[in-house]
Figure (tube, rainbow, N blue to C red):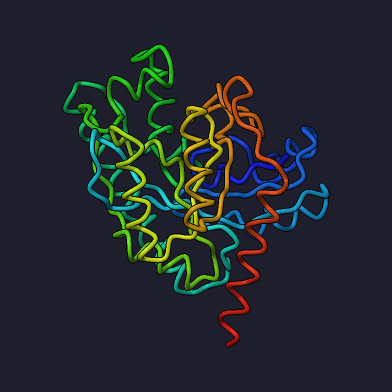
Length: 291
């Protein structure tokens, strides 16, 4: 089994890259991808430790995308097999990371307006050297007793449409897909069901629209995704030639109900053949570039 969607302390996870790989080895996973939000700062460390633990490492990133979606849905793209030394990718992600930090400052200001005394300094200390994310704010709210759980922090204050939510700077769909492709990566639509279309037909139409801009595939296996959604995605992949990926979206203690390699209540197991399929697609892409 493999897991191609995890986060480290370089964004909003609680495991270092080394700890992610140690856990993967303990669980008997054969491959792991690091897909931190808007940063690849942990990738070099991740790749190096992979050799030590005997786990195949896939360099990746997760990018939030500006897209008009129904029901407060959101669109995220995973870039798998990206070149972490791509200067254009590094520069773009640095810009997005700067905007993410500015968003965090606005979020703190919004909480202060709601009479919740959180400071920017407190948030920076919570995030450490990693990219600042809403889970860091949620942990502060929990520690202060404002909420009773991380999930409650999102449900009451931080989720899209809630009082302290602040939109972040995002790339448009075509630009994000091109960024991943130019960095040598495969573009994978993360958690397609969270685009929140009322029907699968709506999600299908959106996926086919993204294909015109270069989308390579999507996560058909994902923690919390309904089984019937997975089945429909696998059928779509067969019909339209999409690559298939999958993962737990592991964040460590910041999503303590989600386990690496198995998701929530063992609801996701990604077979080794998925990695083989992605590697074949990547190889074909590289051959295309030669000719």
